[in-house]
Length: 493
Ligand SMILES: NC(=O)c1ccc[n+]([C@@H]2O[C@H](COP(=O)([O-])OP(=O)(O)OC[C@H]3O[C@@H](n4cnc5c(N)ncnc54)[C@H](O)[C@@H]3O)[C@@H](O)[C@H]2O)c1
Ligand SMILES: O=C[C@H](O)CS(=O)(=O)O
Image 1 (cartoon, rainbow, N blue to C red):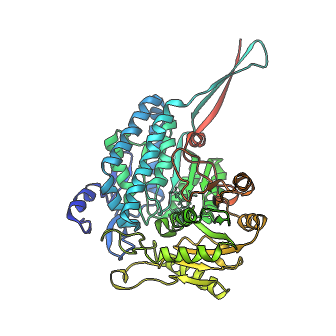
Image 2 (image 1 turned 60 degrees about the vertical axis):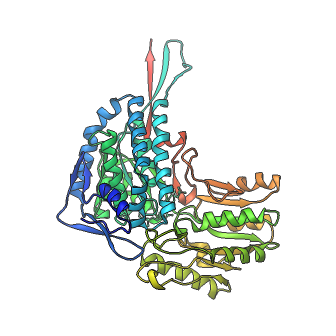
Image 3 (image 1 turned 135 degrees about the vertical axis):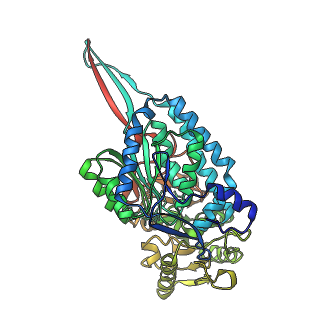
């Protein structure tokens, strides 16, 4: 199958990583029925993958279950060495992985390359954590007893991941899982499966034993039924929309699985009068428009104190008008397409609703269809000032390059607006007031707060939300806890 890429040198490199089969028990398994993977920038065919279902998923769970004991029997140092080699291979193939990602997901090549490094950083980080799983010898409750606590791998892990970060959302789970001694079955999004399969291809070269890392895709509900219902799966981890996360988490109750969820956001981005406005503009651009606004931690509501609201709005609009919007494989761009037509329709609905309620459109506001953009899902980077608080974009995750500015007067009012949502993933505050810098993170009901920065995601920190944005944390040493069970040995002397 010929990968249609613009530069032949990169086509060759990406072609080597391109797979049209699922990866089960160390084998590439083709299917009679296939799914087409399309480039969101122009609708062209990037690749095909099997349309698999329950039967193939059970085969993958069987492989993971069979491999788990031997994998856990390796030392943390041995598992860590394999994870580190996997990370090295990702970086050695960084350009090819980035091209494949831009082809199937649409993000600018520079962002895709950044995600490859970000994804590799989780394998690198957990290669070290693999060597640091410790236990405890507790102070006994009686002189003839000894209390020994050890941590052991939970067992077979099932992971379901989204399309917006096709590599990082997988390694953020596979890293700690494999470091802990678990094995894993991954179902990537059917919109972006090629990056996951390229990762599997590199896992072989890294020495990940057969059955330890498996990738299956196709009929998502049928696959999900097996992953949430098979009792051999002891841990289910999901990254995606809140609605689907709730559905799948509920299904895990039947076999009492460990569950971790990374769900939707509705991030407030709060700019006070005393903020460094230049820094706040840069932070808003980075947070709002990364991946064309398709990240779970994007600024979803930009709250600006009234003293600086109009100046901030005009300056933000001036900046977004300079964005280079286009296909990521055709040359340097600042913003790529949205993932599909549904995303385009949602973006337009949020814009139309905000304007109909009195918001002032300062930039963008419509789909882009000129020239090379005609066949893609391109939406103009958009800024709307004075958005009312009952607007759709204040109540729903927009997941598009649409910046809605809400005016506020006081700190208490900003906190009330910010916390008025069921989401609780990320929030951002720009202020130069020291006391306010302490008050705001404490008052905001979110798992993560960016203070004078719009970029908070790193493998070195615990990523996750509160309320309906999720359960558990991914990244940092905290990220191991979801893949380990605590076992007590009470020794009678
Ligand atoms: N909190 C985080 O870390 C984080 C990270 C990335 C994305 N997200 C969220 O994910 C959403 C965007 O991703 P998406 O559109 O892929 O979400 P989605 O929920 O539509 O899909 C996520 C995954 O679930 C699968 N899926 C969907 N329905 C299923 C079913 N019935 N059974 C089994 N699997 C099913 C999909 O195929 C995909 O692999 C946004 O809400 C975003 O905020 C959150
Ligand atoms: O979309 C959610 C991802 O977790 C984004 S990030 O790259 O981890 O910030």
